[in-house]
Image (cartoon, rainbow, N blue to C red; front, top):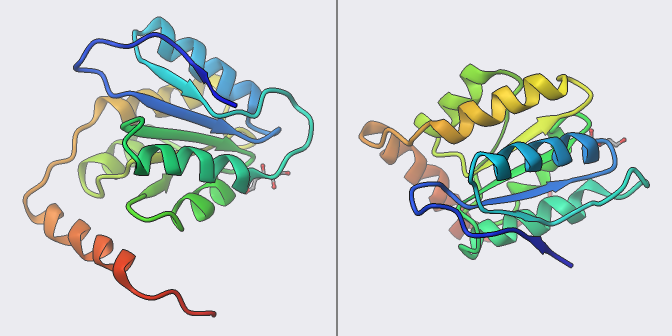
Length: 163
Ligand code: RB5
């Protein structure tokens, strides 16, 4: 079950979108904005305000980014927290919750975040678009930050233990 739109110009990252019922309306607004701005967007659902479980959508989007089907993911739930927790369990995913433009930008520049998790019950739709635009407009700075991100990536190799 996947809705895909046209290809975007090469310089724009391809975006995988996902939301639960709490984030559905905001996800639709983000999709509309991104498509009008020329981004290629895939929509992993959900497609209504009927109650669903956020991990299902976080996992779908995270796997698409992990497998390179899209370059970046944007997830929306009530707070962004559950989406980020679930997405960060998928190897290679660095999901950041951001509630403002600065942290969204820094999550790309310093942490090379490849998924942005947003809270539709925290921010207005206008603010959500602003935060998403800041995330998408930023680039990973590399340098000393690469070494630190590599240390996070190494954790993907650790065997999983029960807490
Ligand atoms: C759903 O009510 C809510 O728990 C979910 O959208 C999200 O905020 C979880 O982190």
